[in-house]
Length: 574
Image 1 (cartoon, one colour):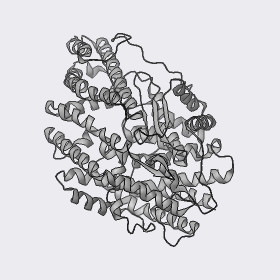
Image 2 (cartoon, one colour; image 1 turned 45 degrees about the vertical axis):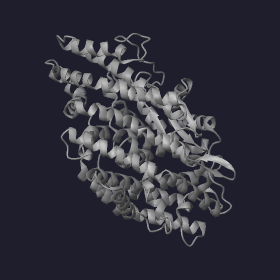
Image 3 (cartoon, one colour; image 1 turned 30 degrees about the vertical axis):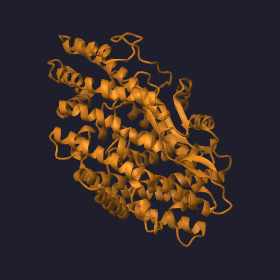
Image 4 (tube, one colour; image 1 turned 90 degrees about the vertical axis):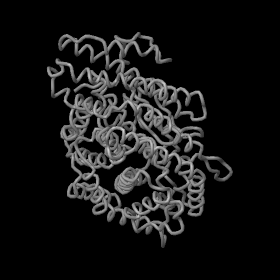
């Protein structure tokens, strides 16, 4: 199938072509028109849905740009004000109309004549939104939208000084790869001490978020926010018991492999004990991998890499670059983390990250490019709602790309030894990420099942869960005060609650995709793109099936995937 990255911004047919969102009064008439419009047959229903989709896409992209601009520069108060204005003045006024429009669609007598295969997941999601909507939650959700962004503001201010030069925490992480162990320890401690300075601010922010989220759940008739959020996230195909099964499978089949990985690292470094500042290091005389110099170099080398896999992928990057949809380098005043932001009208998304010249940045880049490819492939779908795909397939798109690209990283490395080290790093990370996913997920279950806990109880439970999934190979003695706030570095807890186990489920899917790719690259890529092209128009099990993988996180399946990955890693070690 011929695929093109030359997608165009969706034209306006319902809204004026040059429409700008500056105040609610200019937007409201379009909602009123849709609420009041008479639907007389299937054709007029489809036209009504297209106009609603256009309105949704416009609003979504407007909100996305406000967030993008604010995260690119957290020091500009006007950018934060523009985002806050949307959250407090626009979004709350949209919600009652959105509910009315959802009900109009579901109650319409012609809705049953729509193709149920094509519309099943979309209508299921609309019904879910109707079930969850509560008028009294509108102001709470607006407050939460603004409050969640405070995490980026607090974290974006964090810097440390190393050798008389100021670095963001993301930039400073490069020193943890130094061959000088005393330098690694010095920087590790400085990073942790800097986090400690804002410990209380992070605790207070999280407590406030928990209380407001719990109230949202109670208002909607749920016992706790976990149960509410599972419904809101559209987790139709698995439940909390499946999450618990996943946690246990990680303990059983992943931790023993991680013990071996770190035992090997300790021996390789010639250490009697492995400390947390040693895990990214190489033996004396081995320089840290520096796969690129700056954001432009990272982009250029990524294009070269993706051209080898499929020219379509490289074309997607070129389209984004032409639109200036990249902000790649870490700098002061920039929010932490990395993301791909789909732009519902433009089609070509925006990639934001904090690159500092490390191997991990290459992984982040190809990960976010996987998300971007998903955006491109789903863009031709006729309705905005069709493009709202589940996170569990979205992360398969990104994590598969981390593994697909591994054999094509020559663009970043000019000798085989560095390439092999990079591949080892990637496969080790593929395995070692699982316990952290389980820790964050299990912690969230406890937090929201016990919303009135004290900070002391929170710390005790976090410490207990962390130890439950920790390897015995790393010596954390004397570092308990830092470990006790380890959760504060995970922005998902603050900004996108319960969105984390998706990474674990998807990592299993990605390993399954990679197994396919090892056997038949062209078939695997075709399955991958076919699945992503469906957007959210199929159930999760069906999307996974189209991709040629199983939607399964049972103990036996986890074991089979871990055995495969470990075997590949052992071959690299030889």
